[in-house]
Image (cartoon, rainbow, N blue to C red; front, side, top):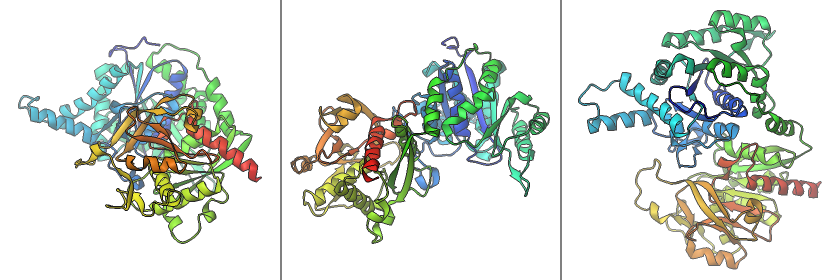
Length: 545
């Protein structure tokens, strides 16, 4: 559209959550963005996270879930992955604002003397820093609409500065340019499944005590809400009935924007913010949802990882596999396997005999490493389609070095200080690095693919870029040995210094990348590595049928 480029007319949507955590604010935010994108608006998504960590890079996947990496190398909350996938946009470091990041900036300003000796306080200094982040992101991305999700739940102590900042935004840019959306739970209780509105009422009361009155309520519920329930919520929460939006559990998360559209939320937001009305373009989204719900075939993919007991730890990999099924008109059934379980004496066949493809996922540290190696050996020897990601590439190289190149004792310097054959070693530029936060090889890096390789065939180009997050790499001292025994180095950095992709041409589908291709996959643009894996897995399934 481009008519809302100035600060005065730029629109801001703030999404808060109440009652319980993990209610689906991220999907709600992403879906709202999709509604606006379908109408041609430029949207800049943002996550405001109350935790004191500067970023998510040092957080445990069991506790926090996946660390999502942006093009410019920011390590962020996994919700930015939802934003990118739904809205088909690239987030930046400015798209993530944490308490730690805010306070770090404020303290650095105080140390420089920027506050001219004044007492530094939450209001106005911390809230001003939060507002600056919101305003800067809109300008940076020339957005018509900035849509920001506030992490946590209304009532949390740590969320208060962010809630106060978004309250002040109403005065900062004008009330006509701000919309507050509150996502809340409408549970059912008792033997008759009685719908209860009281949790929503109390959540809105908490929000109002902070000075924010929601304009829209998105009500998460497992069963349809009768009109009288919507009217009751409208009356007690002082929100128009048409702004009480039912959000049912659906077959696929990508169906949520279509439900919101049917509920009239897109038109409501456009009208409330004074945006230029336009007809939404829904063909592409309707088509991909139809394929996801009614595929013609299916296949089963095993994901072997170190953190599979947390469903969010490999969120982008799970979604990228689902995306890969779309061009293949296939439903993807994912079998999550904790790599430790492959180290307990049971043969890999017990875990992998019934799957059509294997992904070996990223991770850090020595736990579960041998389990990953055994899974890869099984895939290589049995012709099982295989995709290795980051650590998955490193383990594929170790397995090949040990069992094909006969370099017994091959290992990574991350796992063993002085292995007999350090086929994986620390990047030279990482030596001497002390701080853990934001010091890995991060963000988008270019890669040169060798013509005629599987990688070239899948990407359709010899020059690509992918996002990275690692400290260790293939040791160039062993490149020739690997090549001599049949492994192809199919992708390298432009200066040929770093191995980015390997494959085995004699195998039906065996490819691994040092990058994280899952971060760039979108439902409307599935990543070629995942689409290729699914295609090979379907062939495998048909061959075994």
